[in-house]
Amino acid sequence: MADRREHAVATAQAYHQGNIAGLDDAMTRRLVASVVMTESSGGNLSVTNKQGYVGRYQAGAGWLADAGYVDKDKLQEAMKGYRSEWAWASKGHMTEFLNDPSNWKHGLSLDKYKGSAELQDDAFRINSGKAYHQAVKNGVLHEDDKPEKIAGFLKARHIAGYGGAVAAATGGRVMRDSNGTSNYDYLHDITRNRDGLDQLMKRAPGQHAPEPARDSNKPGVLKEGAHGEAVGKLQGELNKLGYDLHTDKQFGPQTEAKVKAFQQDHGLKPDGQVGPQTQAALDRELKLQAQRGGQHLGDAEHPAHGVFKQALDGVHKIDADRQRTPDQISQNVAGSLAVAAQRAGLTRIDHVVMSEDGSRLYAVQGDLNSPLKKMAEVPTQQAVNTSLEQSSRELAQAGQQQTAANANQKAQETQAQAAPQR
Image (cartoon, rainbow, N blue to C red; front, side, top):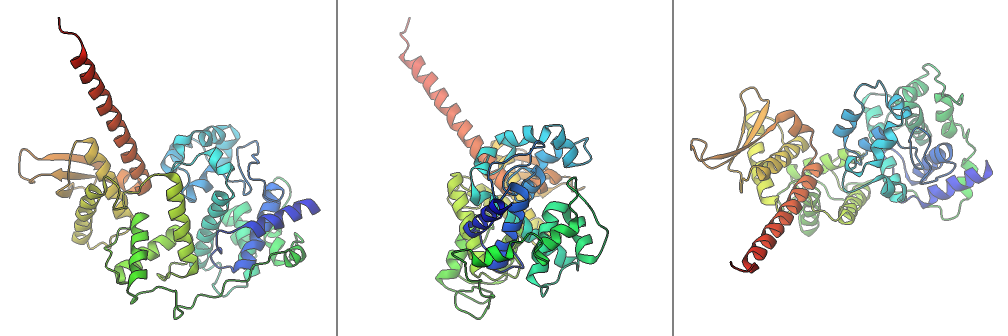
């Protein structure tokens, strides 16, 4: 037990993915230590149980999908006919699913995940942040709750599920797992120091000072009304990550909306202000994007960005006609239309049209009334549920295939020209 605790504390001290929503630095590390001690004997990155749950946080496919690492649509298709992930996993299907790199997003894979503390810790931060915001929204937690209660709730949520955590936090029923440990036990690991880590954490070397509370009046915090080079840099970073913005160096309502969307997507408090935590999350995502080696459609340097932007302009017109505020769904739809347009041979998108029943969307090149117009179509629901990252990847793959096809055709033509004439 001592070794497990020491390993858990070392894992927590090495954690550098930023504070989990609702917690300061010290309590974030306290939560990490407690969870990895329970789940992976202190932080083993590659440990995998017989059902296929993997890594220091014993991640399942659904948890990985929630973090944005695994394709949700493919996961839902793979789990058809099963009532729960556990039942599906117990048949060996989760192991099969996670071993297939095509089920992962952003060029990730099971081996890459198992080999990266950064990826595993960031997934835990993202999902814990989402759980915190959900609990606050539902009135289960409050922003002024003691950090120990929030951290205890998040541990119970991670292991016993959201329902188990809510029950423990509100005096509901006791739920025990196969080891006989209850949802209350997981909550009290932190609220009552049941796991005995408080003393070890306090004397651990290299303790990090708690991050100060965000003060929007302090220098370095960008919010609505700010302007200048720092705002322009922020807008450029958001664009690279697919949150489409006009780079005017003015922090107006549109920039605030995109910041909130980014924060919501990454488990941060969606207050629309860019302080240390949000900037750290931006830096991490840009670093991961660079490591993946692929450009995002929202990046102005992406070869298909022009067509994507044309599609997005068309989608925004439909949003305006329906008095709908443009959001991430708008970008998902535009990305799907850009992919469909390329596959159909369109070189530009002049119009985006929705069918009368709203079930299909069309990208149109040329005059709408011209018999010579070119069209590409996508099912609306499919477009809504296809992430911009997935569309970016599909366009990159299609471009590589086209380049290879062109190279083969050129080689064949060269061979034909070089052949002796009879």
